[in-house]
Image 1 (cartoon, rainbow, N blue to C red):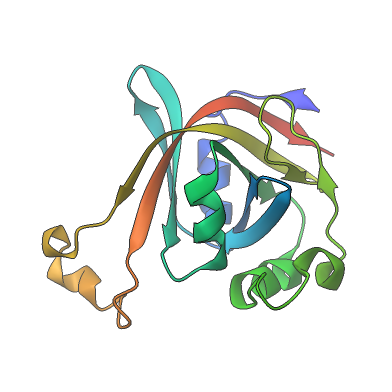
Image 2 (spheres, rainbow, N blue to C red):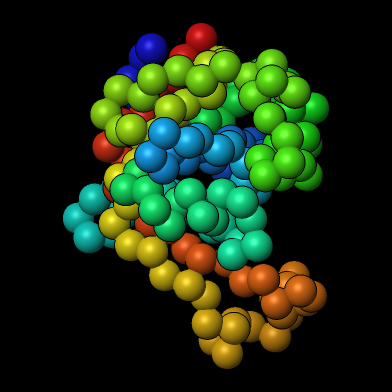
Length: 165
């Protein structure tokens, strides 16, 4: 593992987010991973922050609502098949780790694990959870929510950022 400055890898991370990254959350003894394609990197509350979005209809939503942290594993090798699978199949119905041959690895500073793969990894402590208010959402974006299953935004303080091989 090589520690990296989150801003130094921001462009690479944002480019990969268009293809997907793994959001992993541990709540109690259970862990779930889903694919995310939206996130924001920045600085807020005098801290480096990674904000992720989770729809209330997702299985991961129940996990992250109970959690104090999360990780985001941004693959640096081709993981399109696993990302597609984890983005279209629910952990309610299938063991994503077994189906995709994904292995979890212990994070350095948070309880939620990372995916063991060559990646840029973010370990985040949840600072704020806030549901979207659809009344405040631009009309152009409303079409992204035909089922009205709006996202909740999770702002995580980046407590560790590193590359794995």
